[in-house]
Length: 487
Image 1: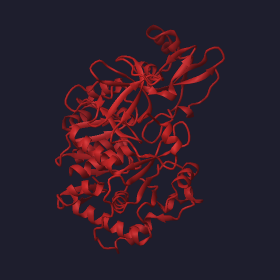
Image 2: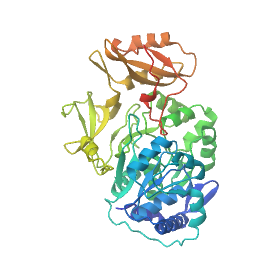
Image 3: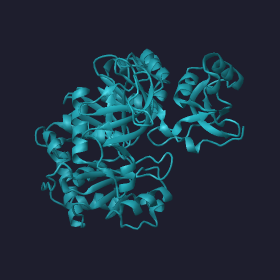
Image 4: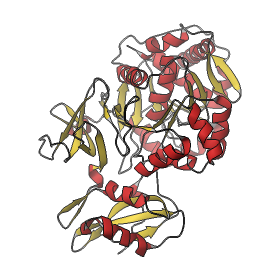
C-alpha cells in the first residue's frame, strides 16, 4: 500500500473531522488534504518530477507537513535535514543526495550559502502556494517507490542516507496502530522534530492512518509542555528519554493529573534508563512504553501495550519482524547471553543511497546487522546492552557501557551519565564515566559504590564532571564528542 492510499482513510473518510492544531488554529482533514494538493501542484510547476529529491531544512511547521504529503503523492523523494545541522553537515547531504531543490527559511540561508542545489525560501512558497488549485493528483502506485532518504545521525562518522519506501512506512504505521491500539478517538501531542523518523514515520503516520487529532509544536519546551498537555488533553505522547527526565521536574500536582488522562507515553530514539521509568511511574502513575527502532528499519521491537512493560527492556519483535541474536561468528546465542541483533522484515530499508558496498556490509545472509548488542530473556524480552562500536575491551574483558551507566544513574547526585573508553597502555582501553551532576559530586563516593557492586574491570578509571552530555537532536549520546582527558 502506498502512503497516499493509507492516508486517504482520513483525507477521504474523515474529511470534515478536526485533524490538526497548529499555532492556535485548527484544520480539518479536508483542509490538510487541500493544502497538500496545492503544494503538490506548486512543486510540479517548479519542475519537480517523480524520483527527484527534495531537501527540507526546516523546523516543525505547517508547511513541513504540506511538503511531505505533496512529495509522497508525486513520487518525489523527501530528504529531511536536521535543523540543527550547519554548513559542513548540510553540505555532505546536499552533495550526496543531489536534490533538485533545498527548501529553508531566509534566516537559515547563511548555513547553505554554497548549496549546489537551488535554494527555495519558505517565505516565498507560503505566498505562492495559495494561487494553485487544490486539484488532487496521485502519481505513485507502486509501494516499493522510495518515499524518503533519511540520513543516519552520524554519531561515529559521516552519515549515510537510508532509503525508505512507501511500503516500509505503511507497514510500520499499521503495526503501531495495531499494537499500540491507536483509534480516531486519540489525541496526539507531537513535539518531536519532523526531520527524524520518530516524529515523521511514527507521529505523522500514526496520526493520518488512524484519523486521530494532532497538536503539533515547533519543539519540546519543558516550561510549556505541561500547559500544552493540560489544554489539549492528549491521550498519546511520543518522547525521548531526555524529555521524560525533564518532566520528572514537574510537581506531583501537575504530573499526576496528566498521567491519569494519558493512555500512552512512548519512549524511543535512545535508551530509557530503568530508574527514569520507575521515577516516572511513581510521579505520573503511568508506565512508559519503551520500544526500539532505527532510521534504517523504523520500528522493530516494542514492550506490550497490554502486559508487562519491563524496565530496561525494549520488549518483543513487532508483527512481521524476525529477530536473531548472534555471536561474532554468526551463530545463535542462548537466552541470557550477549549477542548482536540481526533483523529481517518488510520494515527494512531498501539500502543506503548510492552506497552498494555499505548496503552489502550492513547485511549478512539476507539479515540486517543492527550493530546493537542485546540479551534475550527466557520469556522473550530483549534488553539492549549498547552499540557494538561502544564495546570496551579492557585487558581481554568485554565491558558493555550501558550496564555501568544504569548503575551510576541510580546513585545520588548523578543527573546524566555516559561511559566511554580511553586508551590505556597496559589494558588497551579502560572505561571512563562522564557525569552531569544534579547535586554534590564526589568521585570517590561513586568509585566506592562501583567497587561494591561491579567487577573490578568494569570500574571506571575516572569520573569526569561535565556540564552536559553531547547528544543528537533526538537524545542519542555522541560519545565521540566527549572530552578526551588523559588518565
